[in-house]
Length: 126
Image (cartoon, helix red, strand yellow):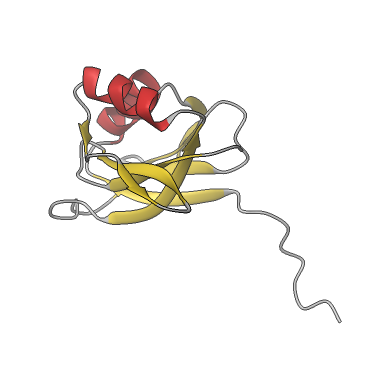
């Protein structure tokens, strides 16, 4: 018996203080595509960004007040070479952690967006 018709994850929302600043970070620094930017009220827009070719997007949702120090989003992005990505983000002055390595687990590191929201980069295939 089928219990749901859910087939995919479209978008994961993260809270940002300044949508323009967040949009510039995700498109200008990370190289994501802007998939949608539409007004939803006189003071807010619905903005979605995503890595080129990705199924799931990130919605940059302006919060009434930005979370203090951001939040751990629990979002994991995949890259083919974690060491190269780590170096590239550091060169762009993105706040990154050291690369974490454990036996049997793909190498990974964290990075923060301008609002302090934390993401994880994991090495592996798509």
